[in-house]
Length: 107
Length: 122
Figure (cartoon, each protein chain N blue to C red):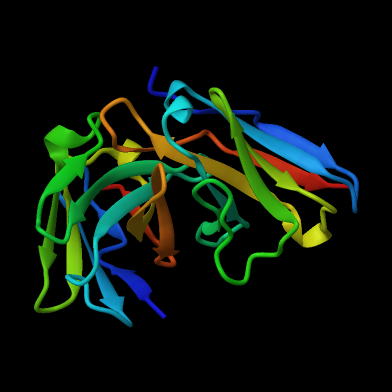
């Protein structure tokens, strides 16, 4: 199917590790990219490709993939990581497709 | 550093056509192998890809919007544009333009505009 499924909400204690997942058939063929969005701001790319971080993104952000599931891991979550996170891949036609988003709360 | 900036009316009447322009600075829109995309986000909801144009001028559209969307490029002005016809209240959203780059095994949006709110209301 041409859908990317994310958990609506995830929480993590300050300094702990959290994994945000994205499921979809297209992820068997394509890598996901991940975006962080804070209230009132445009999304920011945090992970792309196999596990690449754009310049300026902290190395506590990492990406991985297995089967139909892509994951964004934050190792040692900080208060400033509280945000919405979106995955992106492709649909069956090769067009971009976003997941529904995950709201991350840092406790 | 590439920068993108959306511009256009913030209020559109129902049944009319929404028109937005994205101005690219810090690089030529026609250099490199990039797509240039439009993405929207209704208040409190997720991101929806609308469509994109390649540097060659070829386009791809979201099937759910394809009948109403036209994306074009003006390389002389380093701009690309979105037209969405027959709008309804459901088209009210923040509209973003973004550079869409092919990467290993996929694509990613590496530069985004700040977004512009378009409200459909009479």
